[in-house]
Image (cartoon, rainbow, N blue to C red; front, side, top):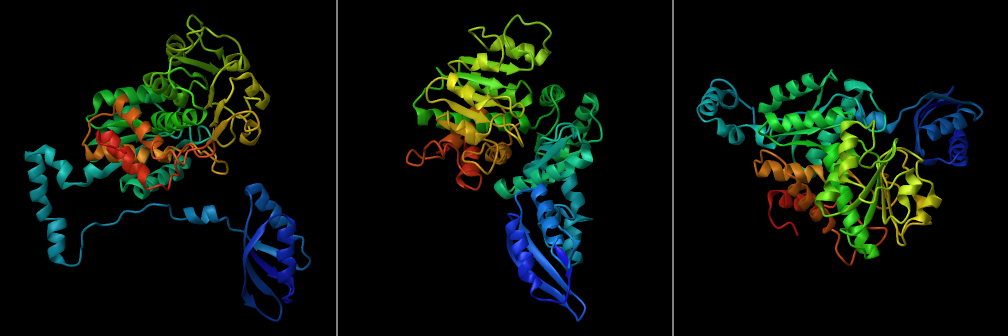
Length: 449
């Protein structure tokens, strides 16, 4: 906050006190200007969230003789001008450098690629580039906010690719939500990329887009909201069941949410050998023979729920070992967890507000995970997608297989050593440098441990 105050340096203490009493934490107060008529103070403080920040602003503004002139949010300041940039990997110091990097020398390289198309991987950036493609229809927990509003998220994704796997990724925000147009647009830009990361595209459109692009392109196509989530969930579940000494194959699992993430999680769980999965959505517990379901939900109903459980979420949870939520806030009452099997595992992953308060779930469950960074066991896709694409690009893979996804999940799980594993630590930190290396090796098919 930049403040205009009366020319009394004692006001500094009053401002600090007001912020502390309102629950804020002052990290710096600087006198930017001092005259005979006023002081200009720059105050830096931490707030719990945006609403709390407004409370702090009001508390300071209420101090006698203080005017809040301007307020800056450090998150917005970080985004000024965007979060990514292009930089040259080669020196451009003189005419000689230019003649090789650009015309006329570059023409020889282009001719060589025209004669031997496979050399595009070696002589261009294609082999280390990923397109992060969205239509802005399902951005974070914000919904259909459009391609422009999605751009900060896609920039962030590109920054994560660079930070965790040294991959150059580019945000591609398409101003259409027509399936045919999205597919054609990605097909047209594909020659410049080594992989396609689909992001924040609403279900069920995302299923068809991914399927068609996988059929038409000779580079891997990965929908992170589906497969990245599924990989990390399976990794975390593998370790959670190690903690409670239960077997994955025999575990009874309830998945809340039949959208993109839920469908991918179920598919990967079944591929991992789980035999008893019940999917709950707006229609209740999905079961074969139900009518009025979308094609995607119909497929889930036919491949899950062997005991033909029907009814609401609480009915589905009776005797279950695991709850995995990728649905909506507050759909799971904490006390329902008592209906589950002993040593229950609860993953409440809806963002920004989970299906159940993790602190409340912890009173009933043996292991609790969420998508939040302020609780233990954060399920975060950053653990998966950088290493997955690093492995795909290194292998020059033309597709991604279910076996690769399973190997990636196993690699993440086993980064957590036996002596580290406990109910509050079932998944490694996103800053653990062993994670992307292990995942990349696993995707390539090497020894990831």
